[in-house]
Length: 149
Image (cartoon, rainbow, N blue to C red; front, top):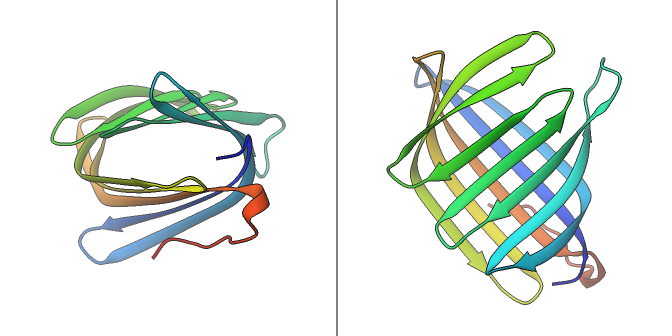
């Protein structure tokens, strides 16, 4: 994997079992491997707000962490069958977020990493939605960029 990568993150929230809310981000980032964990760094611009969010994605053998710093701050940890609580600080106030991952699948090769996570999301101790994240990290110089299915 090269230092410069293309990152695709596709997420889906299923609210009340039927209302889908898809989200997709494609961006350039930087990659490095340290102590057996993959790190992807990228900046995110939030529409309608001045400033940005610096994101760090950490991929372990069986875990995913997303750390956001800037106009919003959070450290989300996804571990299979373990509920993790965190404080999500936004410009509009703080939320207590609970994440319970049901499935984490990570596949890696020399030029890319695919991650799939299915999880339940609670906000302020209230169930909000069943969600999924699909992430593809690809070396920028491969020329083969695709969204995971």
